[in-house]
Amino acid sequence: MSLGQAIDGDEISLEIDIDQGARVSSLQYRGYECVLPFHGQVMTWGWYAMAPWAGRIKNGIVKDSSGKSYQLPTNLAPPHAIHGFTLTHAWQELGSGYFRIDFPEPYQGARLEQRFEILDNALRWSLEYESGDLDLPFWIGFHPWFPRELARGGQAEIEFSAGKMYERGSDYVPNGKLITPTPGPWDDAFTEVRGVPTVYWEDAISIKIESDAPCWVVYDQDPEGVCVEPQTAPPDAQNLGISGDSYLEALFIFHEI
Image (cartoon, rainbow, N blue to C red):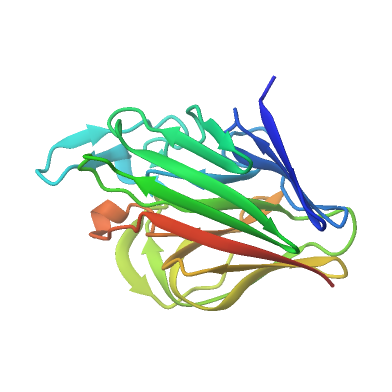
């Protein structure tokens, strides 16, 4: 049986599954379930953190500053590594809405702290990465899965606008070129985001996502759910020569419409 933690507010209540990546397994807002439940695969449900990398790393290879290579697990999205160790390794519960994960090799010595805080009709979610003496690239991100359909109302729609999109190859890894965003469907990373990205269900609710993240990934190719993901750097950042910040915060603001 998985270990869980519940956090209740006036408008919002959370359930966090500590054994399943310390992810949000349920988020209720005024009777609406805003989290896509498990539907067959570890990566495709809940709201979870990604660290010490977010998205794919080509062929699962990272290098330290001296050029020495390290092989990361590629079992979830072969031949690439994807979404870090946060989904597949143990977390510690440090308090209400407060968790930590200590990473395995080759990231042993590094850790991530995760916090959730309910603020009336909003959820503040934050991540802080501590590298210790480790000399390996890192970047972090959020991966919330929103259900396409709620108990009532229309299907999920995404309001999202950005100045640039990272071009990617057929392997779904960015090649480093920035282009004008193309029409969806997307499994793509963007920068120069304009306005406040929003997921909404007509005649039901909207969720605005406020974050200073320099990169956002939008994924809308799953028939069950959609994702809008603030990140400190794009997928495969190390091979693009991009460094990620060690702190990331997002505010998810809920409204009934």
